[in-house]
Image 1 (spheres, helix red, strand yellow):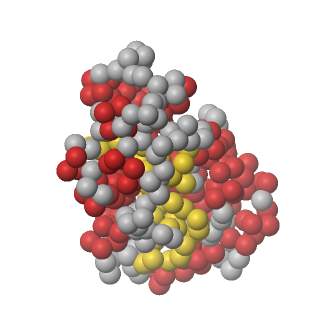
Image 2: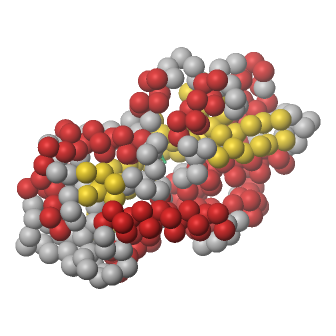
Length: 301
Ligand code: PBE
């Protein structure tokens, strides 16, 4: 916890130095009469560099002719971005962020995705379970679980919101299992006892993935599997699956968000199934930014 807080403070400091206006109310309120670019220094507030939404935003800046017009993408972390977003919303200031669902930011704040007529962020996105090749033969019991596991954005949100409110991920996951015995039964259908078999799961510390990794770990533990959870960045997560360093991950956003990773590791991972349907990524703004509805609006308005 100490470490996380320190990291958050450092990230915020980075923001303050870059944007020169942290805390102080130097930034004006959103003005619908004026062009947006100069109001936010032509800057989109982003997250960790390895996230797919960051790569796709770089592509969007090119495809919509924004990079050529001074627009840039600020790298930071989810924690720093949501903190800056919180401040902006409280002061009704303009802000453009890299947004996605499922995430509590869309529950906590009135946000809207900007329309993406060029479909840079894809159309139909899901969170996939991926496994190392050979897992099916080597650990068929675990593989059966991977084939069974799926849930909905609403169900995931139950855990994610608790964790965001300060509940320990393992505690939140255990409470979820207790509340949904029928679902857990379906996840464990035809899954044999683990007899202490070791399972290594790689995940990226995005809120939705912290929730899924923990709920899966707890469910497998009830069947006698010995689960190790390994948090890592997106690129190492894909690498861990491709090299067999980890058995599986529930953190793959496909077909668009992690397209670059999926391409570079093609043939070296097993795309087991979609574990959550209805995901989406893109650029997002608070709903009080009435004159901005599409990415195309960034250029002109
Ligand atoms: N995210 C959350 C990730 C996937 C999960 C949208 C930040 C990404 O962009 O890679």
